[in-house]
Length: 177
Image (cartoon, rainbow, N blue to C red; front, side, top):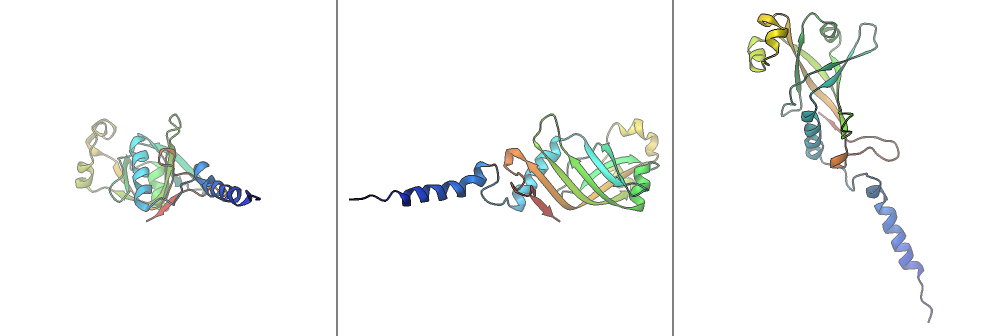
């Protein structure tokens, strides 16, 4: 009696091919919006500084380091600056920004949050968000402006949560707000 071993081998090969994305680090199923936002919040909260990219007067990108507050429930982000800076002039001319969170020393991944920046000078909002170092940086609150970034799109790589780029085109998990 002849035994056909091709069928079990084909089944094993098919199972291996189906498992390859998971073995390569791609999630077995797409992450939910909630999973993606939870991972993003964890990474964003762990970063003390963020890169703020604005559009400069000449149309090119301009990037600087900022000290943000942790993200709000809606993933919007607040930070403070001096109202007489180039960044404020750039935001008045074009409120489109990207915030880039990533700790290169820990290499846990990154979050890129694209949105629109609102300039806020409301004394009640400033008082609500007061940080001790502002007393020295902005004596009497002079020239202090809050930047409120309202998110439009969030992209993330978070290795611990297995939120990795697509193996072929490297498209990353994203959330549109």
